[in-house]
Length: 274
Image 1 (cartoon, rainbow, N blue to C red):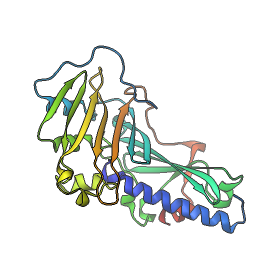
Image 2: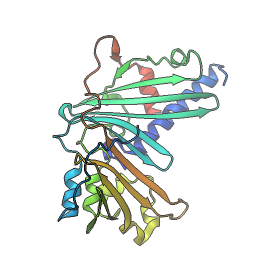
Image 3: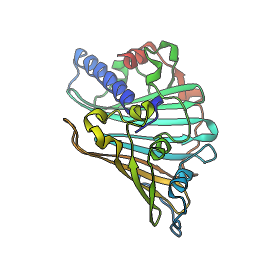
Image 4: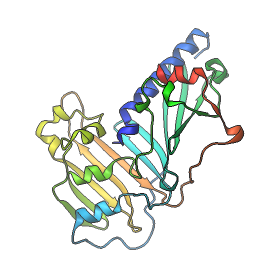
């Protein structure tokens, strides 16, 4: 449940490619094996137009930096959005069993520029084996096989919650800052692309009425949106969750400088391009 720019499918593909390359290299080298904060204060009063009130709670360009997380079944992504800097940071982690190590990858975007930082743990000297620095690496999008796979900053709503809410014919205000409704995952192509982990076709008519619950904190900010996707085909029922929190408490994003950064070496593009 993410913007097309950094869709979960694209990021999972990058992680899969990267870890496959890493695992192959390690083996050939002969090596062995935030909770959402909703603030304090009185709960929002019931609104005359629940749908409009919920949409007004979605983050926009006027908001301060905040953190977010998305959960799609077993997949989880964490990050920071800084609207003032047109900045986005997105992190993921993959554990490899054979050989056993962990790869954590973080992308940072400031306007048109993008950096990636890779952290490898579990096997001593793995960064040297892979010829991957521990610093931020400035990427050249022209050297990527598919530049659309890596994140860009689109807007202050990285999980596209507003687009989901707009597909609902009506939204119910259930009180205490909780809203409910039914999303139509077939509404348009962009919505379909948002839900790469969902077999929309297999859902059939059920895809047009997927129940969701949203929570707005006392500060008026959307803190969570949860869709309860029913089982379909070979896919089990699953929850898709987006959380927005730490408004004004998250770190502001800026371009890495000095000893923190270098240009990405050829090994980084080999990893990302698979």
